[in-house]
Image 1 (cartoon, rainbow, N blue to C red):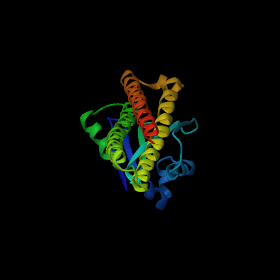
Image 2: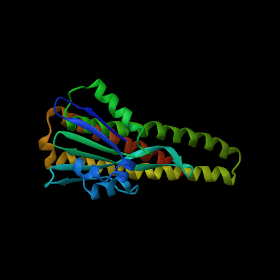
Image 3: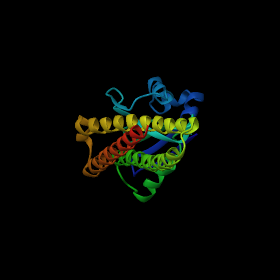
Image 4: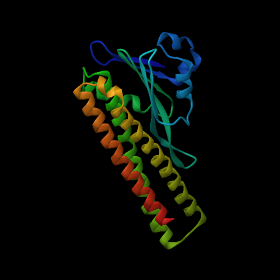
Length: 227
């Protein structure tokens, strides 16, 4: 599945489902992509990072996204690929992170005419927002388990506690990587390409990501103490 919509008068946003790329190799040349980018998008274990392709004048950003559906009884994260080309932002989605595409689209509905980089950083901010309800849900489940464990310790309850701790470990690692990536974007030469609105959006994204790290670390500490 491929969807496209304008960001402003000259720039557009293109979202491509990774399965579509796998079945249509002609898309690589059509949209200025290479096989390495596709490999990034297909690798569910790809770490958050950024690259700049001087030859193609393209920024590639891999960002950790929460999967709201538990895998093996705990939450995990998946990478999402953002590609900034001249006059275009490309996102490569899969079944685990496609829920974000409508969220990104709603931002454009409310903010027509923004720049590509402003839209990019707003999208990364939106990603961070998706973690908070899941961390709060983990905290609620932890509190419920704590009450049960005070009454009776069973193997099943201990397994449930372990699942919660595993999910938090994924979140702590993923959110820390995201913060490092955003800090790199702020200090690298790319920041010189940004207008004031994009810089502010980048700062907001970094602040939100740092707050998320603090929240996930606190949750991890409390779970460790409970264990």
